[in-house]
Image (tube, rainbow, N blue to C red; front, side, top):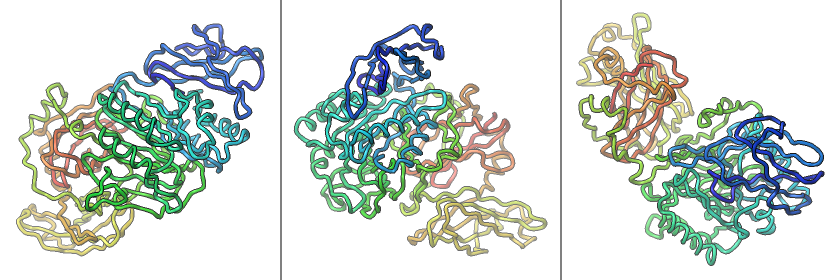
Length: 608
């Protein structure tokens, strides 16, 4: 737990069931249970009996940022197992991994499943925004902390928790004491990663205005240098179930401050459903619903609504500005760096089949992890207006490669329709099939009632005619194949194919295949070269946009197969420098293509 700077402090708490005179022994070197070799020791700073437990807390200060510490607890009866924790990074150059959720009340099996996932994902911190137990009894709290031991990784790593009060905690004092909070009123703020993230924990069980509202406004005003701001509290302002009321006190006292001071992400609970909104801001102008209107440039994303084991409710109060919603057990898995926030929703299920993350790369989803993938994509990316643009590429390792290309004049193409924002084309290829040609393409997150027209040109693309009408399957993953039997036509060097995509809302566009990629492979050596960093295997890719667009990055091998695919929807105009992880990509020659609204924007040759 943290009550001060997470980079240089830590609170270790435990229930002293028996024995006396406990002492923590601590070091940056792992000495197992040999307490005599640990250089530092400390007695408890706080001892408070509550909920049938003898709660002991050691408050450590003066620690090194981003550092693993190993410790044991020794008392009159013996020595504990060896545990460890890691302090938070102290500068904004380090990426953060955060798990956020709440409502673990009474379905203990689900709660245990979620806790096991925490152990396997090894985040920097868990944000738990209330309703730990159902009736706030001694027995329930003891069970809750017993279950929380399942968040400890197999190697003894303990994840810090930042707690908020929910409506099933009978008083502030319960959360204040059991989690050794810095504020008896259960509202407080901490910085993670230096000025990378200012994290606010608010108390929705006391008046949102008054002293709490005044404190929030002062703190926001005094911390404008924070790159990102995030808030957690329990009661949803606009819950997505009709079983829960609107919380207008919070709306009136907090929503305006969130907008005024650019709070980027808000995590809520209590409703026992799952939701993520588009960026929204408080408004009563035409088009606003329930006091909010979508604002992709200056809005705040709201997510969560609780699902760590509490009884699920029907998600039956969806708003026009809701991005995705459902009813299932879940928590949010959040990555934060200087350029963006990524929000994923993890389904709580089958923890035993989920692999552990690589401790050296905690940002790669392990095999078996179930990430919610609604129609508009499984990752919500939040960018701060102005900060998402590359202000200077002078020192960029990709600068010379980028400038070696001819300047690209972007086509005037409208963004993809909002109704199919999650729809993506994965491959569009033609290959020999005996004396014929087989044309194939794949789609992901295809909307219902979509269709395609396969069109062919025999004059190098000057004119096209439709050769097949194809009804869509409307599934999350689809593959289509068409055998072109016109052998004479198929052998022509000027043969071209394209797709006309007919969306269910009546809009249509044209999509061109990876035939162009083969031509790029033929002229491979004339393309600018990119090489991944030999240590991190990260490849830096630069490009620029003059208008908002859907961007894709594809790494393609010599067999025209996709090795890496990244979708970046609704990117704002500006210059970008993206990292592509090539750790799992075999050595060889690759073509990297950046597309803007499905048309080529940049091409590079990549050598690994």
